[in-house]
Image 1: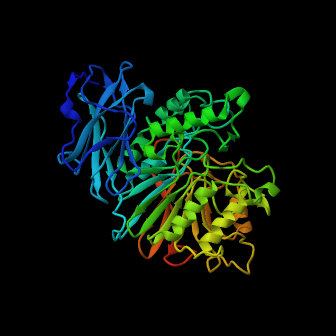
Image 2: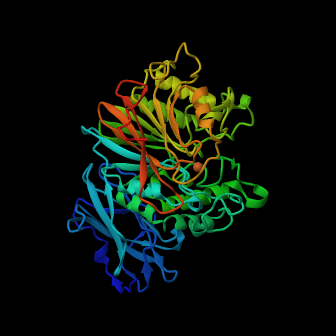
Image 3: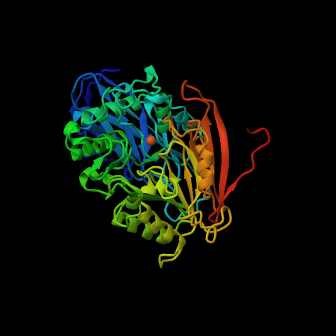
Length: 528
Ligand SMILES: [Fe+2]
């Protein structure tokens, strides 16, 4: 806490002529603002959406009284913050829940930077971030983590702690369910940790509710550490608004009780953009597309999808509806953008970062296990598979890697429309058009009875590895990509019931350049 006097106009200027700080939030640049209040930084710092010359920097201030706050930011080339390359001051206020988002430009590609914020003598923790490589640059290696599904009250975010301690990550992906909208009623009968209560106690519906929920999450030390250690690229799934959401409604939304869906959706989106380090230019509340792509030199291009609010149809009610060709997980425009973009990408590896499991998963043949996942939107999935494999009339797309979350379990899949057709598909050998790595949840359990994981693998030969389906295994995965191969390593904290840094290493799976099949890497001696 601190007391602060006058902030002069000079504080708004940047240090070097080539570098400028741009307030990306639509907020005001501080020119000369009188501020004499108390401020705390309780919610950590974050960075995101790295580009070769810029990255979003984020924090949130908690003022002692409701008044506009000028927040000074600085970004440096060194951890000691002695070589500051840009700084500035922006004003935040209640209209954006006292969150701060700035985008320093003119940074160098593919290098680390350190940043922090201050108001008077009150100073935030420091964060480390990393810009993306220049688009055509020769890049030897890219490493990134994938995470999803963190229900605060179900456990400690040890998986995020593990992500924070991972050395050399270029970026961390949040593939959805960063928060959960559920209230105490929705979670009755489950094992909640009393010390992990997440206000509001009712389900989040209003803007205030979503802001309150995000604020609780951002007090978590492991989540703060993971944000402070690496830049993130974030995309939402359903629970950032409401369970099983789509463009015009949600499973967990009753207009008679909760009011108009569009109001709730708009509120969830607004709070998400306030509280996460996502570029404002992707904000659908302002008419923009949330789906986007980021290039990491000549090695990797990431395609980040929005399969929730860009033309998604409601989930199917039965197996017939699941194959309806008009049923959409994303708009035709996004589908075209994805396929054209992957086809024309100059990067060696095309990584699709998205929400629900893409590979087929059925309880019985023809019966989707989760109608809310891609198995409820089969026609559009098949169009993607045809494009990847080049059977749609266009050229095949090589080195396709899909990363997904949502299902609270590890699945490593070869992508093929019907894996029971042994004429066209032989597991581990031929017939697949790419691979998929699904990460386990940070904390959220999935009640799949013991033995069903093995049953799934039997029914679906394209599932080459799965874990955690019966024991609620939680964790994250790290993908390591170079010119020769893409390797996924899984990590499982020993428990979510206590704060702990202990984690178990799971299997490592490899996709070799030019191939479409998964290899399970040998276990090291002594591994379980
Ligand atoms: Fe989830």
